[in-house]
Image (cartoon, rainbow, N blue to C red; front, side, top):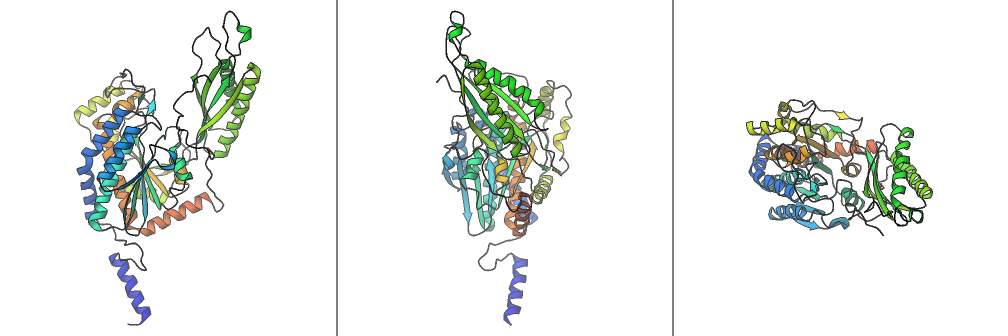
Length: 493
């Protein structure tokens, strides 16, 4: 056989059998038997997903304080044969778990596990706080982390059984809620060699619809004044709280003169300790959001001027610290269609009569609740470029590597995000069922990517086209170290 004929024969063989050429990765087309095996693996691991999800729900640890939650997920990965590196990118609760089998694609799965402050709630369908607890999983990140690890463990089992070449990574990313944990992972280059990234998020419906999010910058303004007796010597005092309140008034007047779709919101995290003492220290925590990062930066600069003016007017001083900042999400249609197809393979969710009763009791706290039957269906696929109302640090990853996500019905239809209703449901079998569906979809999508190099190539081409030839990543929060104390309000200084 002539050399050219031999080469053609080898190429044909590689295309039909999955053998690699020139030392490349083995790319074996995925079969229905493979998919069935992966789904079986997730079902077998569902008890572990449930155990992790409910334990993390009970830990309810806020950003950068998720010590128990992070350790639990790391232990599960180590037990499953992953190499785990903890404390990456300057974040004690961040980790990267890796399973590598030869040369091939590097596929990442994201795992979150931080709770929200102020949402302590029992796993009951009526509003019932937990005395002494200050946080709750109102965004369902207990389910997020547990399902992502479960997906990775199940996918790794399939890779081992079928000698699938490549590297599977799990990125344990803390402090998504305002702490921008993933930004530090990107900034430190931990995604530079990743070929594609998968994630999911708890939802009240099942959807692989891709879309954009809002870029944001968040941070704290700290006013310093002079304390004095508020009745006996008010003239000797300079109220730091007056500075905060005057800044808030200026910010609220600013809303009339900012671009459409801009969001500004704040909370006073320290306003003094006693009415009869002029506060010499006060702190206010701000967010600015918009689909365009440049608009966010401009509005934030105007907020800084409002703070300076408030300090001048009240005879106080002010300093500020940017504690978080993220891009707008860059959707990938190539990967979105694959994720959608796999979600449809997995199907919707069926609740028991007891779960339906729980959900309907939750819905008595809503004004116009939708049907609970929507959890049985999959929403239509598409790309939503109008932008949602929220932000995510997944966005920075999406500008670095092709990224795709989905949502599954872990919450009661009609629930508002960041609510006690979400906390309650995230701690029940309703939440766990949605998490298991997400794990199945993630694992199937990961298998598709390991088995189809052309799919990865196409997704990368789409990313390159969307971000443009001159794009260079620069974090919105600059070069500051992780704000490990951003969930702690400072006292007087």
